Structure formats: C-alpha cells, structure tokens
Image 1 (cartoon, rainbow, N blue to C red):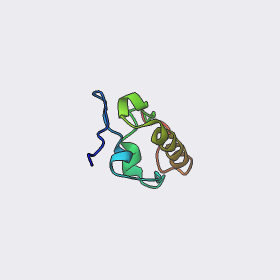
Image 2: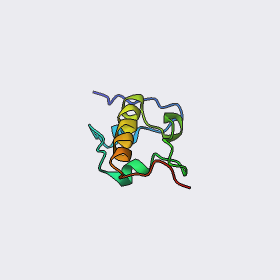
Image 3: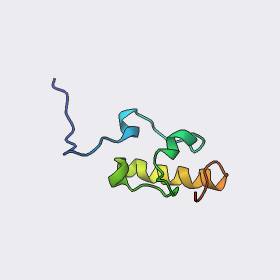
Image 4: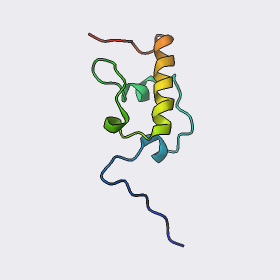
Length: 76
C-alpha cells in the first residue's frame, strides 16, 4: 500500500502533529516561548504554522503559564 501524503500547499507542517505531541504542557516554557513574538503576544496560526487544534491548546497553555508567572504577560 502506498503511504498517503499530505498536501501542505507551501505551508509549514504543524510542529505538534509532526512530533506527535498529544497534549501541550504549560510547564514547558521553552516550547511555549517559540510561539510568542517579541512583545510576548501569541503568534497567529498563519505565522507559526500550527494547525487549528494545536493552536487552541497552545493559547490555553500560554495563558495558564502566564497566570502561574512562568511567562511574562508583556515585555518592554
């Protein structure tokens, strides 16, 4: 049988789908900080290349990490 190839049409493949991460951990600050811009705002899915399912999990994990002071709300 042939492997089914996914069409990405020039878009980035979702990092979390590629590495088969089921749930995004809010304590993994280094991974979460990859998806923040220089003003600590959450990057949109179009820029980060994350699928819609993982973008929702990612934003929830970032918000939880901010609440627990693992990530700053704003940087100057």
